[in-house]
Image (tube, rainbow, N blue to C red):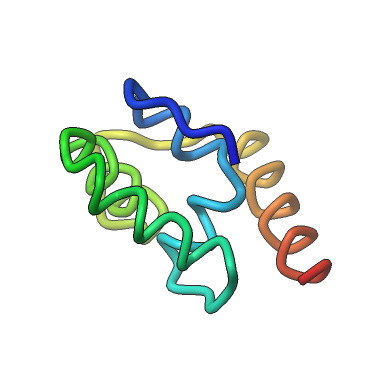
Length: 82
């Protein structure tokens, strides 16, 4: 995990370990990210926005269909390896 304090929403959406955490997937990544997010609470706005996007709750930010398919494929591949 290569955590940057100045992560943007897009950075969170491209980080497989964050995605596992945001989707409440039990894993080592979930535990690590929960710890990091507590320690670096300054990123709370960005993480909440990224979680809302992943949950389909944010209608202001949408992914184009190709990016959505790539993201889903990466998520499923990442989860299959665990």
